[in-house]
Length: 322
Image (tube, rainbow, N blue to C red; front, side):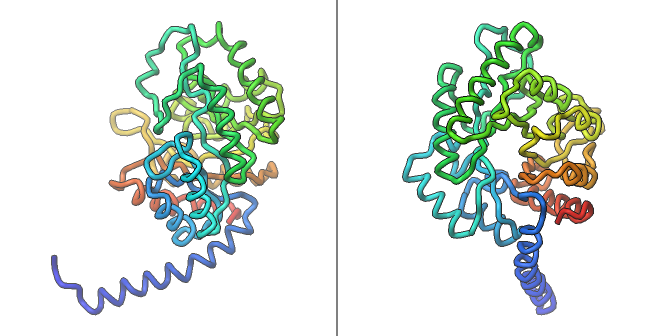
């Protein structure tokens, strides 16, 4: 390794000082945004303390979304681990947007298994259908423990023909939403490309079929692109009931040289995030916009998330929401 010159050392030191000085300024700006700007912590690192440090100190943010930490899905944490995580959040002055639970990310009973099964992301969760009431109950417990009123959910692994089961699935979502609502918790259904609600247009249909106001949408336009809705913004977006959008995941997707859709940094891909942020602002949206990087082109989750955060920040600035 070549020796570090005095010039290079000073340049590096200057960058570090500038970054440290910029973080408080950005934190001040972020607090004035109409959105709760957040990052899913395990998209940076499984080391929860380090992930929180990056979010608060390097990114200058005040919000975090929780899915897994220290190598465990949130569902599998002990009460002592929950207490420790709360202390970490307090140390970095971070608040929780929602519990990114795996609720209903399971097979619908009695339905034939689909070829879509190969794309399943479990993120450390392994509960079956019969255990979903327990997952819901524990997710509500986690939400209260971490001071949020939102729990993310899905609508079961994607079926090649969901029509014979759609009404029963909607009934299950309705029941779960009403149960959560009695506890003061809002379920936010994510449009997930590997589940039965994958696109904006499908999300609109599902919400129409589940009238409970305790069920809202976690809008993820890049997931919609991954399901083939290449006009997720703004075609899929236009179909959505805007008053039922209560969470938003930020990532992007492109077609590679082979024509396959794959994840990309936030500033590259089918989703024009500057325009999407403007559209959210125009509808009076005041909930979370949460970075869910997924792309790993920089080699590590943290390096990739840093690049995606840079693109997300530029889009927020360009949309006058930061």
